[in-house]
Every structure is written in C-alpha cells, then in structure tokens.
Amino acid sequence: MPTEPLRCAGALIVDDDGRIFIQRRSPDRRLFPNCWDIVGGHLEPGEEIDDALRREVTEETGWSVSHVLGLVGEYRYTADDGLTRVETDFLVRVDGDLSRPRLEAGKHTEFRWLAESDVALLDEHRDVNDGLIRRIAEDGFAALRSIGLTG
Image (cartoon, rainbow, N blue to C red; front, top):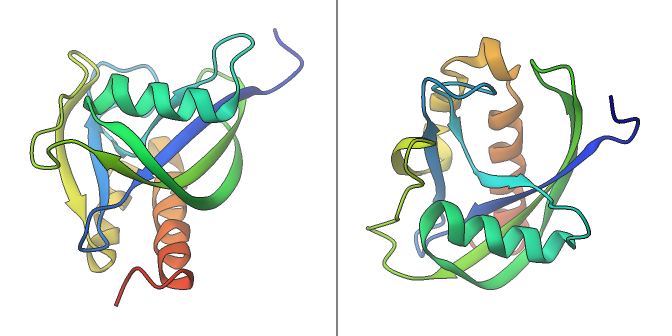
C-alpha cells in the first residue's frame, strides 16, 4: 500500500450563466458509482497538477481548458477502496461546444449544468461519497461569488 496519498486534480467547469458542469459516473464504477461528479482524476507519475487538470478535462469532455479562474480547495478523503486521496479542485473555463461534451465511454452516462439552487441534487447517493461532491460544488459556487461570476 502506498504511504503517500494519491493526488487528484478536479475541474469545476463554469459556463456563461455561472453554472457548474457535472456528469454522472457509470453504475459499474468502483468509486462513487452512479454519483454525480465534477471532472477530474488521478495525476500520472511525474505529472504536474496543471497538466493533469488539462488532460482530465479533455479526456472526460473533449473540451480544452482556456482559463484557470482560481483554486476552489483541497480535499482529503479515503474512498471505498481504502486509499487516501488529496484532490485539488479549480474553477475553469473551457473552449468547445458546451452543449455537446464528449463523455468518456463506459465511465459517465449523462451530464448537466448545475445551478447553485440545484446543489441538493448532489446528495443523491450521498452514502457512497459522504457529501464530498456537494461540499466541493458549494465551495465552487462560493468561489464564483467571490470573483463576481454569479448573481
């Protein structure tokens, strides 16, 4: 077992209406099955966090990061596989058709743009993510407000 926590990068992709992109994980995923989630994943060996952030956005959506707006937070958690992870999440803008993400086949089944008023949706299947995704989204909306991007 690794002694260092696994490092992850996450992207809270923001649209022109101040909504955040979420996607539903496939029901057969080992971690957080059937849960809504933000874009992101593990850093590859030797990879810098910014490079992982950009790679994950392209892999999971087909879009490319145009701007990193700021840091949302760092989250430490132990998942069902027993491994501790430290996830660093950022607010980002992307280039591409925001109505047509290219979801990663077999990993995600649907997507939506989440308004702050809809954040309770992220409590669905909370038992398998302990409210982590909702906390990240709430922090993301707070960060958006702090930089003046939501009304």
